Length: 379
Image (cartoon, rainbow, N blue to C red; front, side, top):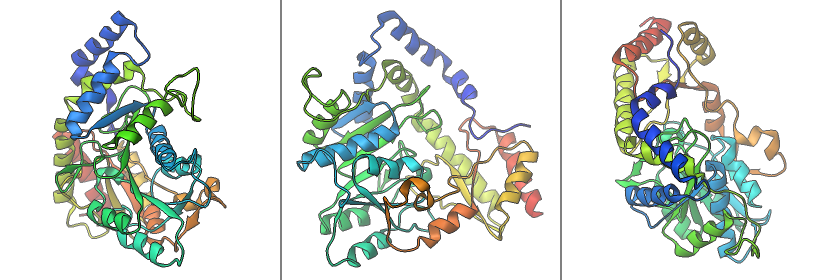
């Protein structure tokens, strides 16, 4: 048995008729740049998320940059300055921190919660309270692995200190916090449609969401080189449009996303039930609103790499998200701040292991993974 992390071929076969028809329509009309599918996809996402504005863009990374740039421009700046601080997590993909640098600001990395791996609200508060004068402008929480951050507490902190909140929802399309869709709680939010995401295209793609009319208007001209009139632009913009063909594919897949999220949740619950008695691993919490982009365990006693190698021998793919915290990466040297040693983030990077959570995985495949893990721990 050979089990990948994700089986996109299997998913394509499951949706083949819908996807083929969607691509065929694009071939017929040949409107490849901001074709009708882009607007339709944006409207359908706005309805799904219950938010006023959804703006498609070229990637999840660009979505964060666009969101940050829009926030800066709304405040009268072309870019943030190096003195402007944006608080985020060091335990995420590099794009989160890199986007802050590209928007001109300085990322401040604070520690994570050891159970759900998300930014720890108390660590945000500790940093803000530790400084007599504050240069913080915003908070950038990441709903890692599809698990919602504590948006109530983060929002209260932001309100108290007059900070914006930009949600990174790259891994959590369809997830909720207190029954409110993620990506609709902060001032502005960023989504990714990278092929492996819960809603993924056949290449790069992303989306910015907001209820703020002014921010939406700014994003709309930033994705088209920076001006309402592309021959007389007002700001430094980007060529960051969502391709028509990607929008068509995402439209076709959108109707399956809730079913697939529920399948992921069911697989996660089975993993947790079947592996609960193994003391040497910490299982992720089954939280309301989590859509399990990844099912990530912590392997104790330095056995993570050995377990990964054992599963590889059994033809079971696993991944380490993420082996190196952002504050330890060369790109952030001298360009970021660390509020305190992020002990939990560093420890997590040495212990986490993500298991396959393909929505169309068979019960037999799930059993094989579970039995293999139990065999390693001799349970």
